[in-house]
Image (cartoon, rainbow, N blue to C red; front, top):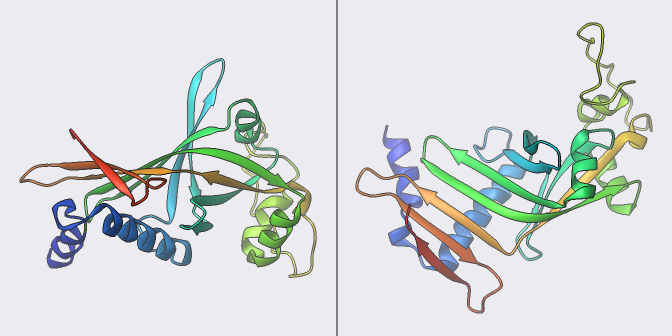
Length: 204
């Protein structure tokens, strides 16, 4: 319980300025790129499907650049989300830390990188276990007759899968933070393009 309370105090928005809150968000997202145990390591990404409305899935946070205002994740170019992003590049990103009881939300514009320098560099930095996912014969969401076995782990210099590998970079200029408190929930939208950085307090 003490750990949970301590983490919650870090996210007590009354203790922050707009700049210090953004720094707290940036530090957390930076840490989340390096640790699979971090509560922000996994992102819920929502896209739009013209015929049926929103679609969402969980992806792994792969990189975060606070100066550029970008977040990226990896995907299979055959995934339905790629076609969705081509039609509508606007995405909604969502994180929730149940221990700290804090939610982060970002609206962003996504760009898909496939077989370009950015994608190749990301591929070379990826672990072999991650690369294995992209060697599947059928892409994500394809109908199959039975549950497939796990793909074999490729060698470090094995290029198989690169043709299916893509990086999605999401560019944003604001972040919304909601902290749940027994004494009153706190919610703000931090505007990163303002100089100095500003926020708008919102009803929770």
